[in-house]
Structure formats: C-alpha cells, structure tokens
Amino acid sequence: MKGIFKGSLFAFMGGACITLQGVANAQIGKDIGTWQAAAVTQMTGFLMAFLIFLLISGRNLPKLNTSGIRAVKPLYLIGGAFGAIVIFSEVTAIQQIGVTLMISALLIAQLCLAFLIDSFGWFGVAKQKMKLPQFVGIGMMIAGVIILKAL
Image (tube, rainbow, N blue to C red; front, side, top):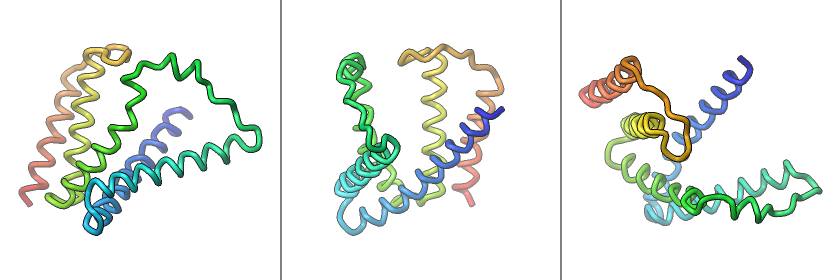
C-alpha cells in the first residue's frame, strides 16, 4: 500500500508539473519562439536535475558509471530528446486549443501508447493482457474530451 501511495503522489506531482511547464512554455514561446522555449526549458531542466543530483549525492560524488551507460541501448539514451518534441507540441497545442484540451489530448495519447506498449511488450516491458474495462476507460476519456470541446 505504501508503494501505491508514494507512486500516486509522484504521478500527481508529475502531472501538475507537466501542466505548469506547458503554461510557462507557452508564455516563453510567445516571447521568444517555440523552439527557443524548448531549448530554454531543456537547459533549465538539466540544471535542476544536476543541482538535485549534487544535493542528494553530497560531497561524495559518485564516479560516472561509463560501463553502465555503455550497456544502455542507444535508442534509450536519446529518450531526453523526446522532451524537445513534447515541449514544442505542448506550446503549439496550448496556443491553438488551450491548456485543458491540450492536457486532455496529451493524456489520451499517453494512455493509448502505454496501452500498445503493454499489449505488445515493447521496449522490454512485460506484456499485459488488456480487457474490456481498459477499452471502455480510454473510450470514456475520448468521449470526455469531445464533450469538453463541445461546451
């Protein structure tokens, strides 16, 4: 139960930060441009992650695990590059359809891709059998976005 609570807390925190980041990026994008906003956001994200890394590791900085990095498949090492596309897409979508619809569409896209990854066991993930409730859930989310858009 502790793991579910902690995992849910981090998921909610991540979701809130995605929304806040999207709004901030849209404003930055208006001032300096969309790809520039993506670059600034990636840079500040790197700096924040590096600062947290330094704070957590304290004075005893661990050595860079080069053998560990070499063991990672190259496809996974470019995972951070997806962030630039995420930021560009969010900024553009917020400017076109607003924050609420952007987040709704983003969540549906995430769920659909996660559904496929689980169903087919892509990227080394254990296959999960999808049943009717999962299909209904995604359908209800799509219906919700359609209703939200209609209002």
